[in-house]
Image 1: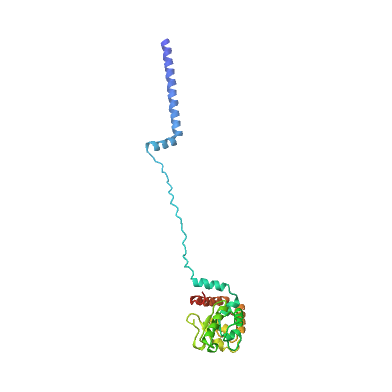
Image 2 (image 1 turned 120 degrees about the vertical axis):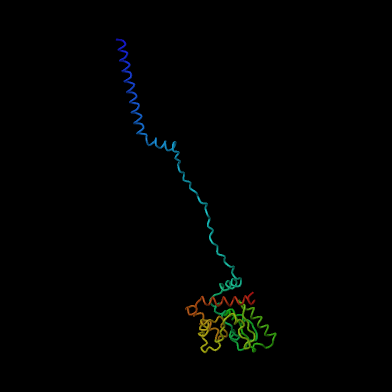
Length: 249
């Protein structure tokens, strides 16, 4: 009886062990199903040696763009000086600078042989660009030289000086375009001066009536018949010639 009981216990114990093994197998099966993706990853990493690609961002060195620089040629000293003189002129001074006149037309005398206060006063009122002298103005060389010298000192803007009258054409005709048609003007009111200027003349020689001509020309600038730009350009060129020739120091 005892032997039979022990045999039964052994069978019972074996059954329990079998059940436990089945449970373990079941648990392992379930675990393998649940964690299969993880297992696959581990397999790939460990067994197959799968590597992770690392993206390296290469930063290009910063390139500094240097803006192009424009090299400006230095301004011509003659132009700079002439421009400064022009900027200090009013319209009357600019208009008068166009005219080269006789001393008689400037001073309203019959024959000018000396330069005094009348010459000084008139040059202040009409600061013309130049004076043209004729033989009648030369009593003798010394007196003539003195008259020219004093006239020059009275001028705020240094003058073109033509000393030989009929024998001398305007000295700077190769640089500046001059018109001597004003002495042929019949009306003496400035119309010929405006016409000659608008036709390209920069220097207007010997108007018949300086006072009327300057007034007419000034009004032409005010009403636009003569543009300020063209007036400024002409006077600038006159001043540049005077500087270049040493007339203006």
